[in-house]
Length: 607
Ligand code: ADP
Ligand code: ZN
Image (cartoon, rainbow, N blue to C red; front, side):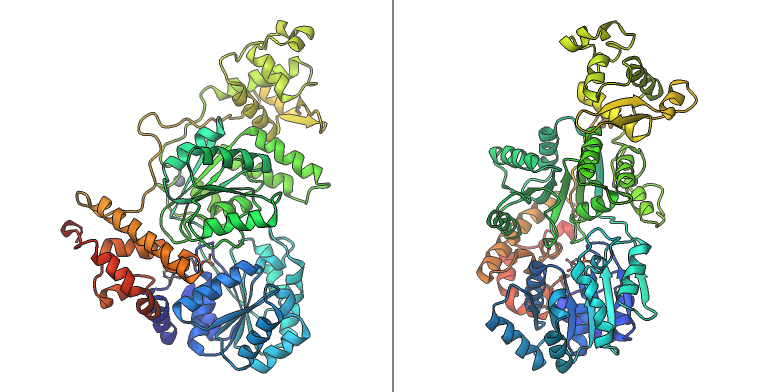
């Protein structure tokens, strides 16, 4: 273990291990099978990369995504660890060169696509080369209960037979026990060490807002993150197109990404974002897997995701470098209905899909600490009474007053109109709209007519969807769905049961607090650090371009922040910065040191 610690310090420049990394590395060294469950940003890669670099034998890493393999290999090259990958992106010559290299024992890590690994020729090659251990990345892909089942992962079961003496280590960010059991069974793990980290992402600030004006709300959030990297998720492709266009018109460096675009445009968008030529990606959920940019400072959901698992995964792409980041979720009751019809249109929805949708909606509406809600959803307990890092704990949300009465008024309107109309029409009646249809049906004579005249239509539709999600209204028909009052709804009308309708109310004074990394005390300290940080970022971008690798493989934001604050001017001091190992000191140190020196002495007040 001491050897590994030394390697972690010298090669990666980390003084300490993150929670559970020591245990996970211990399992690798002890050649005991393991399942390591850590959230995104938890530092899973180091758990197999560090022992591989330290024991001097070949580790084989299974990874589902071609782009990630290349990234990881480039990242290892940047710290001086020899590694290579085998997947369908290689030409025949390149592949033979890698195979020869592996046979000669040239690499510490070999990344292999699952479908290639299980080929007899590949297994034979690895047997000859000698394998120290297998690391299965994104191991939940093996389980049908995970959110990303990949049939090719199923074949990995052959590894145990082909290499009975070699330990297998599975890594995933998916928390459910069911997935864990599946992984152990499919890989025939033997008494695996099961290491499950905390699912709380304490550096993320979670906010949930009812959506009233998508563009305005997105721009308001973007204003808190000028020049920073982020992702805006939309449910539908058309929304992606509109929103990205609107942002570009406002001069933002935004690109779009969804499955309806040509491969070339998708690739270009991804490349622009990775190379830091674009700040914002507006995308459907098709975007994100395979993006390792660690300095994503915000993730905005412009529509509600279809499950909390999806939300955790997508929002989790923010702040992988451990620095503060914001996750804003904008939802409306209509999102619930939209997802429901999407799920129904896909045929019989997967078991649990509709309840999961309901749970997601419940999360949006609940006025409870977001950190706590998420952690508890994944079956863990949350220690603190208040997180200080979500809209609820920051006091940005209150519930609507008189909500019980409100629910009754809405339900009564549905009842009075006979339960034969859709949400749009019911909202018209409640608002007292003077439409031809209302007049023709004489609904302007009902008691409910115009009862909620002052409420915007979008809000009314949201409440109707909320009542549906809470089982007070039932929807019938797919093309022109109508709403009817359920048994539960009748109980609410009779006052036997209560429901709460929520509406986020922005804090009267100050507005949402901008998310900023902790800055040193002292007048002007922040500005001085920020200036140097931006200069270092520009240098990082330039050096990445020269080398043809993504900027985040040069240094993380966390390292640049530390440099901007500590202002090392000697190689010894530079080596003390987190994320600076010997190789980076040698290759990148001179130019970064020159940049720092060019910015003058450290601020005396910032120690
Ligand atoms: P995961 O695969 O679990 O999402 P990564 O392996 O990508 O996480 O690591 C997340 C971030 O944490 C990376 O920027 C990585 O460099 C950093 N990191 C990993 N281990 C350590 C450590 N011991 N100390 C400091 N930073 C670390
Ligand atoms: Zn909280």
